[in-house]
Image (cartoon, rainbow, N blue to C red; front, side):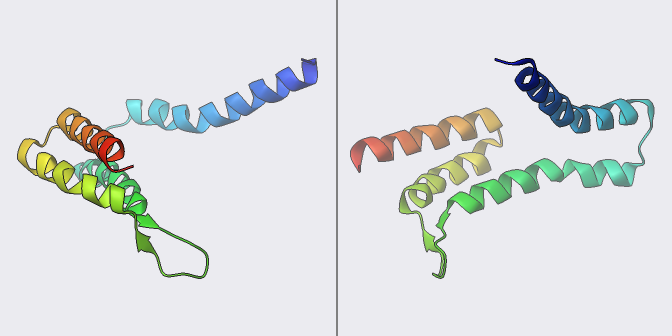
Length: 107
């Protein structure tokens, strides 16, 4: 590996790392208003919901999206576990278990 390649890798790592760390360093010293804290509390659930719903559909160029049947079937018990427990660990375990069972018995 040449020095140039090593510098490119290190530079890419720093450029990726800095935008993630700088906000934490700036916010650590500031007291944010309650409105901002309440707003930011919804960000994780919005991101997880977007990722979850995105995987329920199969998108092909020029066609109407169709359902990914495996994921839709696994989503039902996972959503039930989410409503009943409200515990992220159990939700992940339920989702992974359902997906494993579906892939083992159906595919």
